[in-house]
Image (cartoon, rainbow, N blue to C red):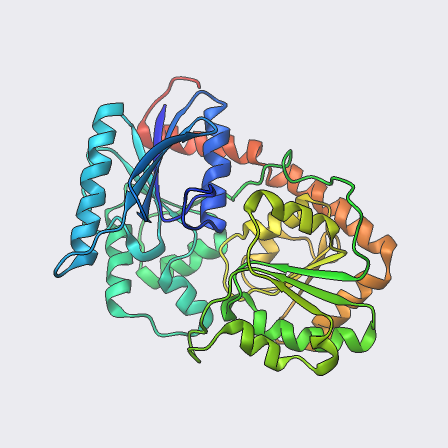
Length: 383
């Protein structure tokens, strides 16, 4: 089988950015290669054109281009033409792309195209209560309309997307998987009372609510300290640095207990997870977050938001706690409990890893994806 992915991100030093979508794609690609599937990845909006191999996956970087007018259309056609050339040369049988921005709208391919719902702009606008630009909605709607098959990373995302775009076709769910052999406890020395948040410093991830939450935490536990790892972005409503807004919300006492690291290489993030005592991910807008899966796989107690997708991924009171980020005091109480109760902290961590290994390991999700691809391609041969 020969599969290719179109994506704006992928974890590699030569690539501009990598987040949850790129991580989930890489996990799947590297697992497919081990099953002797030929995999290509087309990464658009890059600084240069390049082709190279990474862990058995052929990576194609497609440089950003500007046109005198309608760049949104002509750049899509540029990607289409490049992809079609490689598809023909390598006899690729199936393409997959994310729903974000409707990148495949106005593209035409001679092979089947799967759109995977990682969360469209319309989806996140809905969760955040923002108004979406009509042009962006149109692109995403048209991309979904033209897809051969739509698959979602969670039932919740499928449900919301169907309603937003009035999708009539059925949408299968195949959860994201995490490499439990890479993300596993390494027995590094834990930083006592350290709370970790990792991800983009942005409102939709609950970062501003986390400031209020941490203010409560330091009242109850004077040793508590917070480490934020992630790139700061301008707030969508205030047009200011989200990190600076976060700092202003902290009390003087909390501000002294807080450290920010801009970014770390993806391969190193597991070391920070390992050293934390509690991980907090109070996001308002996710589909099926890789950060949660990675945390649980590392045997770390997690306190996270209780929205939509959460109950599909976590077991409240067993692998961690789910709480509304708006309920600052209750969220803080859960964190403090896990800082103070080391026995429960460790138990939740072990339960979390077992839960991920049993339900969301990359190996398990691999077979579900292979079955999906075979059905779409119409290929009956065993891999």
